[in-house]
Image (tube, rainbow, N blue to C red; front, side, top):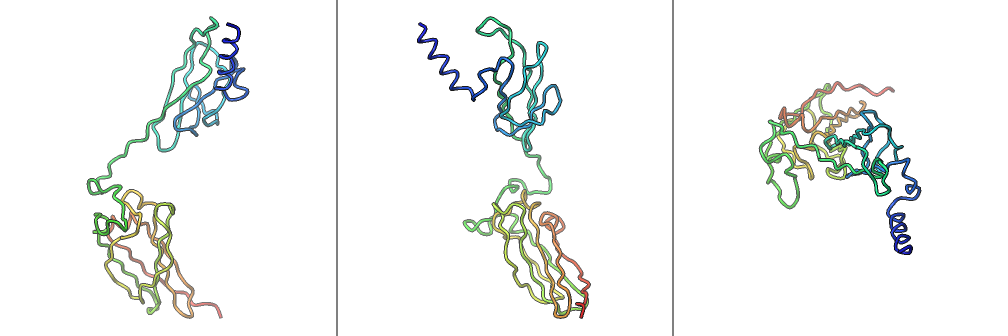
Length: 229
């Protein structure tokens, strides 16, 4: 019987993270997913899961969880009788968070929010069918104009090298067939326009893709500045 109890104690010790065994004065807090900020009775502890918090006073307390992209979670923790007969708080707590539901954008075609531009299905998204007017002018005219993709989500939409468009004044209609682009992530992607003319300083402007989609236009005027001799 003593050997059995010893084995059970060993198993419990293996389950707990080292130093958690003395958890009569501590509580181990987990969440799914992890890396959620922990709040106790509404106060930020500046700790993220998994973490150890001290035993709390009173008969109950609330523990909250906050993580970007997820609904806030909250648990009411109350004392309960333990196997040793004492009334204690649980030695471990688990909070399960729910992803924040997508809030429908009325400007996005139904079913197209996450429909991605890809090589496998070229031209199959409403995004690729959206025609954008591109118009650029400058003083003086005759400058060369280049464009490239600048992305804050390069793991999905890659940055690109410069591509030559033509000379100013420049006007065209183009669609956004940028690989990886969706209506939903277009806010994180920009079109960079560079204007270059011999004897003048290069000028660069950036345009948010989502804003360009809503306006159905990318346009600007460049006042070129001569290089200092």
